[in-house]
Image 1: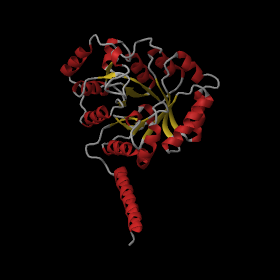
Image 2: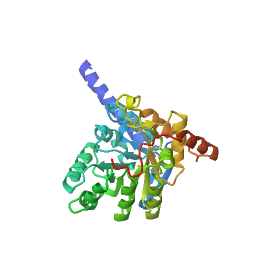
Image 3: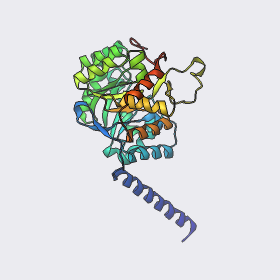
Image 4: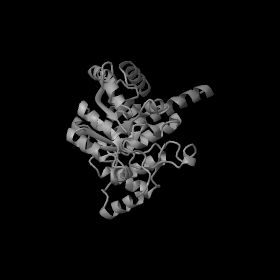
Length: 320
């Protein structure tokens, strides 16, 4: 066999082995899998930890494939991404392709009107290499003016409802950083899900979150949580140069405080929590989830004591 024919055959064999490995990972049942919970009235069962697309942002295609495969192998089936997460969609699409059939994919739009949200959706479907997303969300509905626009004439809700009829999305939700807007949104539209911060510092130091959680439970809206491992804002001299480039906020201390913070969040009536995009924190979150147990009284008291006087990352009435 000539050298070039040998190399060609070797490449074909390697590709076949890689494909077979992905197929095996896509079908096997993980040992000690991450638990799942029901997503509101949708009936969907999601892993209690979600894979935030920022984890693969700016990673190589090989690195992205490896971390996605690891997550699936450990029982994660909930993946969340957005156009504003740099090249995360571009990286996540190919990496998730072997597992798409058994994954719940959530995406977002920053578009507030019909046309720009439609453009976001079509581009996301292209980059994610799928014909539909399971959950499509208004991204960061922070201001009441944003809510008025998306639900008003010519607003992005028209895109979502049309896309649902077309089979391009299955459920409609929103993410939010304002308690006022969150409550108003759930009163004004029959959303399937809400994605918002459920965090011990925010609940205790800012009073931010309990009212959203209560309204979501009343409306039977599926509750997805952000910032379970967050703690505070970066100091002024660290905002542009800090050790976690994928975290705009300062996460809880690794690993003990971060683990307690996530367990605090998971001890609330939520379906799933999305940890920071930092790979170390994401892997820690999978460890916590695989062996999850609610916080004990002493553990909670210790965690809350460490949050006293800490500057929250959001405040009530925060509309920025």
